Image 1 (cartoon, rainbow over the protein chains, first blue to last red):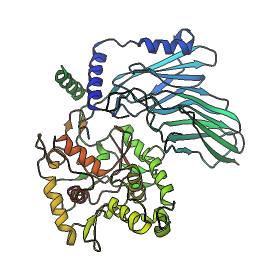
Image 2 (tube, rainbow over the protein chains, first blue to last red):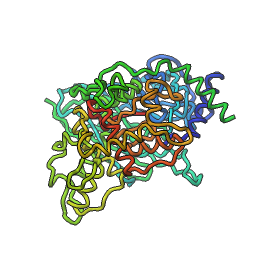
Image 3 (cartoon, rainbow over the protein chains, first blue to last red):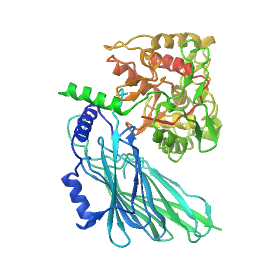
Image 4 (tube, chains in turn green, cyan, purple):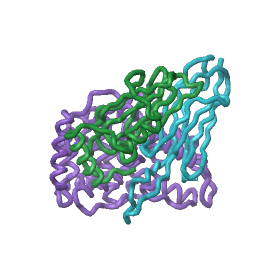
Amino acid sequence: MQLTRRNAILMGAGAILMTGLPLRASAAGEDAIAAFTGGAEVGEGDIKLTAPEIAENGNTVPIEVSSDSATEIMVLALGNPTPPVATFKFGPLAASRSASTRIRLAGTQDVVAIAKLEDGSFVKASTTVKVTIGGCGG
Amino acid sequence: MAEGVKPRVKVPKTASAGEVIVIKTLISHKMESGQRKDGDGNVIPRSIINRFTCDFNGENVVDVTLEPAISTNPYLEFEATVPESGEFKFTWYDDDGSVYEEIKKIAVE
Amino acid sequence: MKRLTVTFTAGLMAATLASADPVDDTLVLNGETEIVTRTAPSPVVADVLDEVISGWHYRGTETRAMQADDFDNPGMIFVEKAEDVWNASEGSEGKSCADCHGASEEMAGVRPVYPKWNEEAGEVRTLEMQINDCREDRMGAEPWKYTGGDMVNMTALISSVSRGMPVDVAIDGPAESTWEQGKDLYYTRFGQLELACASCHEENNGKMIRADHLSQGQINGFPVYRLKNSKLNAVHSRFKGCVRDTRAETFAPGSPEFIALELYVASRGNGLSVEGPSIRN
């Protein structure tokens, strides 16, 4: 997916809004979370989300999720046009409840990981990733 | 089948029973998000890998749902336990109905 | 409003990124091959650069790490695609690259010396020109588009087997006039912005251009897998992008101007290891 100059400017505008206003999950993000949790309460706990504080390019941002007791982990980018990113379901031969991938972020925003634990409860972790805008178009 | 799709998998050739092994996978795919427009202003339709699974001797390791926010050439890394010798089966499911498979054997010593 | 946004953004980014200096780090490929990413300048640039530095040092932690492992490097999947092509027969002669050259590893040492004078043809040839010469004259196959997917994949394969070897293009003898032409281009200001290659990459490397680091513009890492467009990019495509950004009419990939410029820019990096396919922004 190519980052055009216009997109970069839009992303920049987004970044300003994000820094000036309290972060809030989009309606689409809330819907996706509700579909995953079935409306259950989401606490803090056994879920870790690792992402760079500053991503060099929003097209390819490495992230990792890990937990000791998750059966499923859903990742969302709340500032993206469509917030869901991926859902990992761990089978009987998964040696750990962890996974890494590379994701697209349309600007600086909060990335959220929600884990469904073995006891049926839900926990979440979130982190802000700043997405930089390039120099020359190249 | 989307053009030129090529899977790539890294699995050790041998392991000891019950050992934790790291698996890395990559597949060449545009992951067209459905958010972009072409030169004439028409939306380029979404075309992505929407699911990836890894099984070992028929038992599941991971089952991943991928959304358009996954980067071009999707990369996934995870860990598996191998109880005995056998084969890993990796499967990628494309929006266009194509299914790409890769098999890797591992010997447990 | 648009202009205002850009100004604000630049300010925001300047505040979040402190230094634009090249990062102090060492690149070891797959835990085995040490890559020379900083070295003493060759005579070509001894009077203008204190040290020759690969663009790898100007990238972020995650991007640098992505290049250090062949599986993490998405450029390598295109190397694998080219390996299939390397071994496939094509054209009226029914030959593959492997039929003449053997395994692709046999090409180790080729990338570092290109562009190179070809005595028979009486011209300086880039790797792309040599590949198409093979395709047309030896294989009886259609030439590839200069910066097309097949071509850039093949140059990535040929570069990959030379990683760790020092760039060593010859600039004297019959190649000298082409090299001189390339040097002239490097210092010529182009476009409405009146920028020469040297304006950014010689006089201002290490500084920020908007929110990005200005590197020395070394080309030892080409072809480059760019995060920006998630694909391998040929060096002439990068030249074209740079010239376009000066708001000039650019030269075409494969043009005599870019061939000369490639030879000259390559010579500025003599001594750096071949890195292609590298990862850049």
